Amino acid sequence: MINNSSVNRWNRLENKSLDQQFINEIIYGLNCSPFESSVVLDTVYKVFGSYFESGSCLQPGQIRLSILSIDAKVSQSISKSKQITVTLTLNDDKEDLQIRKRYGVIGLRRHKIQRICQQAFDQGGLLTVEDLAYRIFNCGERTLCRDLQHFKDNDIFIALRSTVKDIGRSLSHRLQVIKLWAKGKQYSEISLSTCHSLAAIQNYVDKFKRTIALYKEGYNAHKISFLLRLSASLVEQYITLYDQLDFIEHRKDELHSFLKKSLSSDNQEVRQ
Image (cartoon, rainbow, N blue to C red):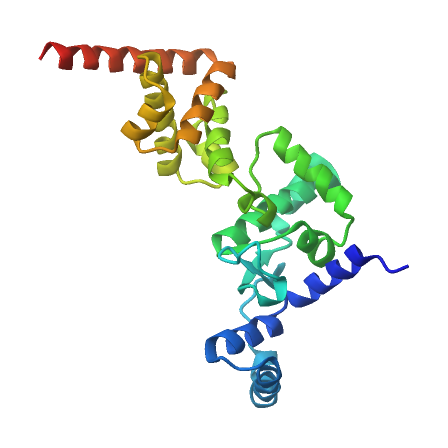
């Protein structure tokens, strides 16, 4: 019996290649048929093949891989999706040897997962679990699922297609930032763990504080949503999170200070 899920997996992997990327550009850019696009590709190989073989700017330990673009739609098939070519550092002798000595094979693999997923994300692409298992590490998907669970348990964001493209991702990312902030993590640490800029981290925390300040003054979620220009869903998530979180002492003081200043400012405006 043929395992359809296995067949589909191999089809997906085969469709993520430099050739397929070029064919897609011809099909959708010049409105050519798949056959015409394949003929154009063959011609390019005949004319420029020797130049392709001699030209390389990769550093030792690096690979180039065709992967799905961040802009690729989830609902679209892999063969028709936008792809880009990224450069990934599979092995860094200076860095990886020390990681291996300190954390072992599992620690090194997890370190590499973080590095290459971030590199792909920075270049505008998103790797998948299948990419990691079948095209990069040549290991089982279960192994990677354990690694991803480790990252999740430690509030470390990994920029995979499954995490970036998930439904409600804008909410989950913001909530993750607030959770790390409440635990006392520095903004630089949160930025590294979540792949968000420092400016974005500061904005999330500020909006969270303002949401709670208005909530404490008796405003409902819809009113807060209007005043802060946030979705009502996000406001409700912030309020729920506030009631559930166990803030570290200095974050508790920081939030209390903000709420006190906010209340004082509102009272002054009322008097005026």
